[in-house]
Amino acid sequence: MTNPEKDERSALIQIAIEARKKAYVPYSHYPVGAALLTKSGKIFTGANIENAAFPVTICAERTAIFKAVSEGELELEAIAVVTKNGGTPCGSCRQVMAEFNPELKIYIANEKGELVQETQLKDILPGYFGPKSLVP
Image 1 (cartoon, one colour):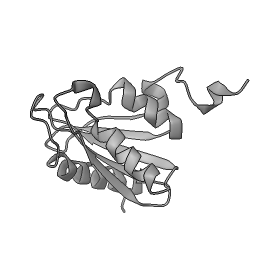
Image 2 (image 1 turned 30 degrees about the vertical axis):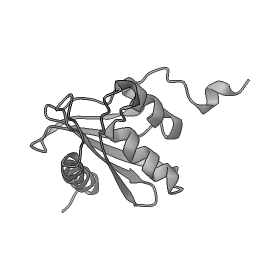
Image 3 (image 1 turned 90 degrees about the vertical axis):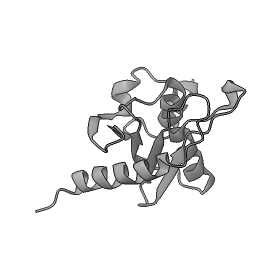
């Protein structure tokens, strides 16, 4: 008997491992890969892309999300993030995730594909500022 959620998690982690290979990290040498699953079943990948002007660097998670949104996919289900040591998404990435789904499943894995943490966005960004925060 298969476990659909475990299969989803494993597949996303493997795709994120492959995406990580495309990272452009000449400064930090810390490649990150992300694989984002949308409600429609499409998967969007991302890798971090650094720039000598550090503030314009973009994280793998935001790359994947922006790719999805630019293709009209606004309903995000789950994201796998793979780093060397299982690092978690930064605050900017968490805020972008909150824009689309505070219930987003997040799978954090190390470069060997080992699951380090499984969580939901609302648990790692409590009190997030989202679209409802702008409604009077």
